[in-house]
Length: 154
Image 1 (cartoon, rainbow, N blue to C red):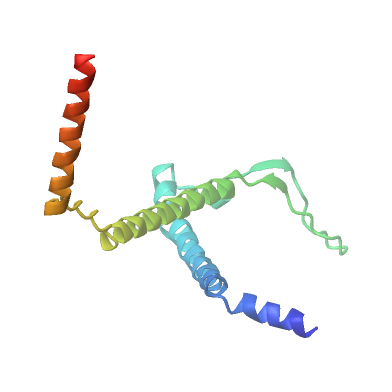
Image 2 (tube, helix red, strand yellow):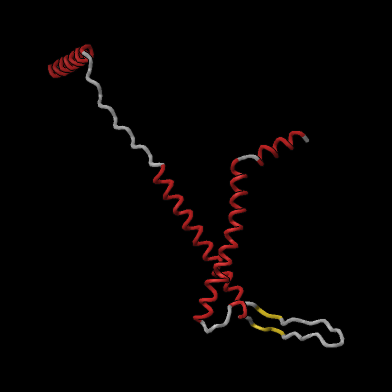
């Protein structure tokens, strides 16, 4: 049991898990903000452009319900397909997706600008040969020349 708790502690206290938890909390709050933006600002403007009906009221009634009777019957609501709510959720999704895209793009651009790669160092020119190397090169060239002359005479 002790090893299990140690492993869990190591997992739970990793930086990535804590970062993920913060991301989930901020994402939840961000989702509420976007939902409010869609429901309270964008959809009323769209509703105004489409004739004044609210999107939440747009639905297709499949089966009409009935109201409760005086005898104590249970009220049955209409059976509907709420396509207005579906449209609001689609708009909500696109705003969240676009916001995340912009945030990631800005983060990547900032990171690229901040962490410019260092240019590769220019290769150093070959150092001048030492006097011994020069002498050995001359000897090698003379030996090659001698060998070519000997082979030419044969």
